[in-house]
Length: 470
Image (cartoon, rainbow, N blue to C red; front, side, top):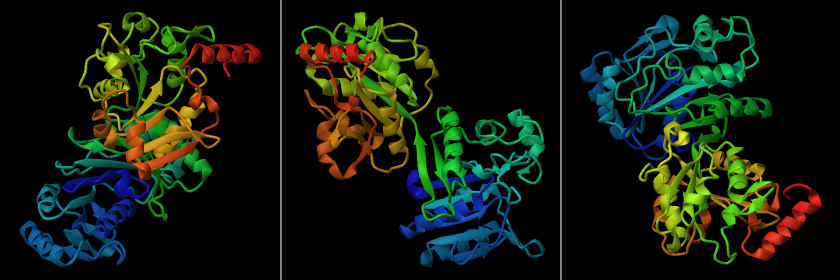
């Protein structure tokens, strides 16, 4: 996917790149993507950069006087979509000296987007900011800390890292040791590392760059897995900005919404409390969900909520759907309100998860509470597919048949909240068929729910024959 899609760039953004391992290339790549969409874009720096090539910009303006610079930019944007601004040329170094950070806000009044490089790294793949860095425009709306994944496996030294002693101090790694994915993760989320100077109102989206093969992809995923749940981060990008496809995965927060409010009328007794593998159905399903990389688990309760709550672990949040008998759409709305923080926990108990969860979910994974054959591997396949697509709906498929759980990006939350009656997400899927990504999953558990007593007896028989949950 493109950088502009992965970063969800909006008009009026001031995007600031910091760190090491491809900032300048990323800045110009993003600028070109936006300009190709007809946006008026200014790229600049508050430190120093090399002069852009003809492919990277349509016009270069070098002007130290702020008032004159703004006038020249305004005139140039009438005829050109992508302008680079610097204060002066450093001929001996073949570099451009950057502008004052305070000028960026005025530039944003002239352009649809301003993209800034706010520190230097001597062309290396990893760095820690010095005391005077980064030089962030205070109006920054999106901060992108960059690291090069090719630093993993190299020694923490001057040959690989800009200011290795500072990196060592921030990450706890010893100078000369091999750099690991953990090192990159710690650096990205350290308040004096990747997050240094981040404006409180800015979104933060780290970019793990230089991912060219399976080993570097695996290392980048390890970094992403470590930092994705951090309160300050909106998303994590994995890719190679110099390649044809700059972003291969965009890791975003996903909340699992477990629908457990129904009365199980067809079955005749609450399915949530059925015995499954030495535990209850609800416990088994929640354990399966919690074994995955979802960031938050919300359990929507209704019928016999007080009884079912006893089997919900403290790591999950519970919310009460008082209108549970109005159909599944009411539980969908309550679940979405919970992850949007528009409804309070239901039971009055102090939930550790409710206090830990800091951020906004970018997607909701709707899980049925009566899927005892569902595997964590199935859920991980759905999540991994979501990280690699721009489509807002991801549906698991096994042997050509679609099943559950289904993931919806927050772009479709309004459509889900408009559902009424005993109508679920299938209605939204039918309305947006071209927005669906089908993903093959490893087991048939995605469409093996328990609706009737015969279903349950069949499940118990299979379980007894295999000695495990089939």
